[in-house]
Length: 81
Image (cartoon, rainbow, N blue to C red):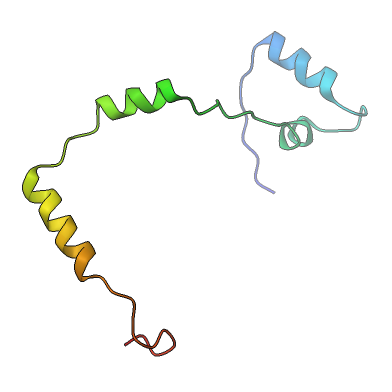
């Protein structure tokens, strides 16, 4: 198995050491069972993202509407036509 050497500060080392379930458990095992929480999705984050999202032109919107109107399900969904 390939390995990679990393540097961590003493506080991180102590936290890893304390998180071991037994002395023989490796730091790799501790890290693999760790839960990394994802930040919650908020309305504020959505508003921030919308501020940097480009606005579609009227022409782009018209082309999207035309494509949507022309998009119909196939007559026979099993044959694709």
